Length: 357
Image (cartoon, rainbow, N blue to C red):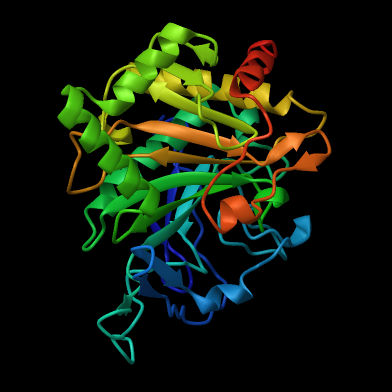
């Protein structure tokens, strides 16, 4: 572990542990003291917390390659990673939505709309030092290093005071709002259950009460039995398009064994995930004549509650509905929360199955 010039934490993860010492220079930049003013405000109309982080307005936005802050440092271009090369690196976001130290609020709000400090953690995970690469282009060994970083940080962040949910994710493509094009993802640690997690756990609790079974295990079993929406599978994992897919392209990747989170995966399950996920990503990039923009997020168990209801899985979706068309969240989705999908899930699954190497 190292410290950046403004005190933020940085951790290197290497593909191999062969005992060789790699150069890890100190951060020689002159950085201002990090000031984070995030706060949470409760919306009583929908029973959700909203994070306000006005300091993020000044974050780096689509810089030239020569000014990419996620590339290795070199003469004349010092970046967030002081080393001249790296395999995988994790560091505290310079413009976090949530942070461990956000100061005191001037007001606690009122009974109807309470306010509280935006306590949490936001970390950046760089998958490769190659600016022009992508997760789909990683080797299985490198993908395993990324997975080890996700699992390690899930444990560490889950131990931090006030943290209730840890979510590793990747946003890929400017179409989904990416502001740095270097291959990377993030890890958010929230002080509450996300609204979607809350709804999914409520559904799982209701299903168990009715059937005495796990909802997600039953979903997986149903998809494996039907077969029509399966994209790829191996001994330990199945990737499928969900029957009620909201997005034009949507793939969920489930382990065959119910586990709560990434740290609970066995070595064999970790290796098998890397192979099937790389396979799925490469199929997705062959779907059109351009790389597919997507969002991929791990659904893990809450840190302290309902872990027996949970089922680790990765959910990926894209807003691209055709070669030259994007799915926009219009009134039905944005105002009412009712998704309308223009693409049949079975058709997407069939097309992806046909795109094997």
